[in-house]
Length: 77
Image (tube, rainbow, N blue to C red; front, side, top):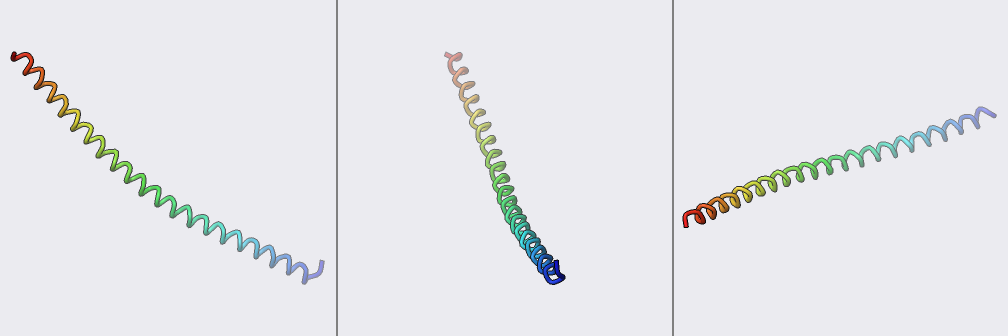
């Protein structure tokens, strides 16, 4: 193999490596953005879940209060 052929092979290998590194950089950037989006979505779902739990507890308390009042009215008769 001549010096010239060896130099061409090295240049091609370097170019392939360069392309692969660029692809990996793009993939990392995409995954970073996707991760940020997913974390935001998860935070929103956690907030929504907390609100729904609070509403459920409020509804349960109101129903229990109504049942207590109905029982009190029933035993008053």
